Image (cartoon, rainbow, N blue to C red; front, side, top):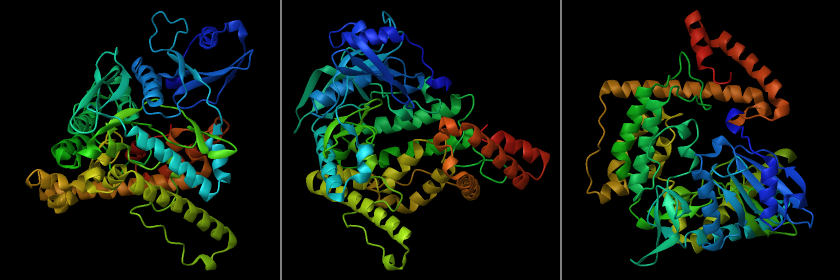
Length: 510
């Protein structure tokens, strides 16, 4: 709650909202607060003539002061006017506190017409859903119409720590855009879990290798400089399981830095830098209710980044489902034992089949209409992408599995495209028999810890605090259930007073 607490002058925010549409604060007749998100306070201001605008005040955890708001405003401008994406127009804003009577950063923007996709998606048929998929795919293709020569986040050109934005055109010619600049990243991975308060290289970077190396150096700086390492919500760490340490995390990250230049794609088209929406889920897309395949607006561009295409190239979040991911171009197979299932199981199987089919249709459509994006999606299925993906969150979790994956990578080394392009250099890592044995033991302990956390998650069912968050009305009950689960776990696993103390310290939910 403390990192989501922000103080500001609501009367002054009302004044800014009214003045943004040429009115006075006395002509604002209603202020409604939208439900809180994780990173912002958002309000709807209604004027006496029916005009409505939206005001947004970032929480301290939204990002670094000044940079996050300044980047979001410039990004929305660029997406709206340069990439021709339906983004609400920014009417007024401030990213600084000096001479700002509101007392906090803010953005006033147009209210998007229509309804959130999440409200109509369940009732949409497969044809309507696919039409929407094609619409969003069209916007993704538009985002690829402007590539950049640097990596980071987008700002107006008067921002410090930035260069005038260079937009790469077809062929070898490069055009500079005087209004915009690429500057430090505002991406969530550079902010979350305590990273926001530490000093490390946030960009901009001149190459994909520089960017990817900076990710590893960022994680090392956080591992070494944080007073206390963040606790994982994927695993329980205690006696008899893997025990994280700064030295083990640093060792895994130093191995990543030795490998990273060989893990990049050899196709420059998918390492090119593009601006992309960071969170395409169904609540950020507004559609016309009577024609839900028609997109009226895409909101929440906060924390957008200019990154290599392969980092962006995942399917939109609203297509995600609990089942096997779509790969290749083949449609999913219908369950062979469908006739043997009861009616409830048949409905569940049919629903999953339709979701998997829609995901497959997205891949097929992307293959037919946007070959470069499809190549980037295919790269994400390779070991060359998997290794950096594992490494970018080693501050929190996964160093045991990463080291184990490094052992396996030696067998695949000569087949990696980046290695072949570099002239087939030898595998740059060496492990002694003792180190291999320690890694194997760490992996076994990590698996045990993940199983314990999974059992705990299953025991709480719908009351599980996903990402540490619960609904307000469930808070007391979840605390009670976790306290009970902790007592049961201590009785089961702690065989001495020392082990009991160790599990008490390792418990992540107090």
